[in-house]
Length: 224
Image 1 (cartoon, helix red, strand yellow):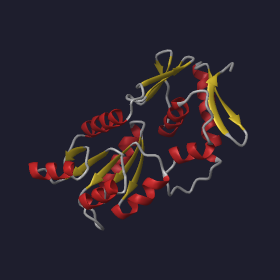
Image 2 (cartoon, rainbow, N blue to C red):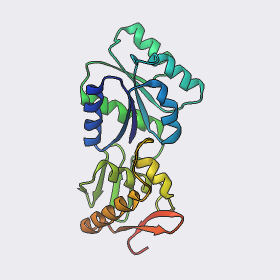
Image 3 (cartoon, one colour):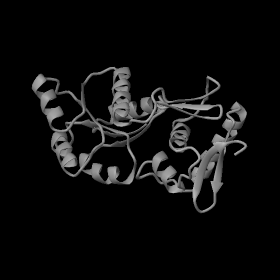
Image 4 (cartoon, rainbow, N blue to C red):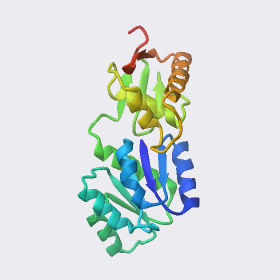
């Protein structure tokens, strides 16, 4: 899952980003709300976490503007405003869920998974050869054994398994794995693919990632 976090508290944001990365998610952070439209337009996010007390714009005003402009992404509101009227206002302004500070990280992760499930009608598990990807638990399994993958490797597996056997453009992989303002070059995808191929082979996953020059990459059975 790729998450856009809009939170001006640097310490809290840093802790959340590290925790979400550790749980196998990709998380991009913005400290200012007015930067959100550009970020949303340049990367495929699954869910947004929005703090209401931002330095440049009220979070509810930002959310209303984004919804008016056509945003359909699930939004979890994260705020210290925990009164009943505040919750109602947040949900009526376009929020899909509401979590008051302080909160338990486990609850935040559970709510994010629920929002992602609600958005997608796709099955939680997808399988090709001996490889199974569980989008809810955020893990890749080979014959029931969990593979040790980084957050970006998990994201790479997920996007390739969304349409197994079909070509995924290199640019799409890059946009999925990296923040809209990241300085990495497109060639970094080749590094991730090479490492993932090696891990698939070591685990006996029975799948390979084929590069089609000028087109992109395709996940297929190893003998495909």
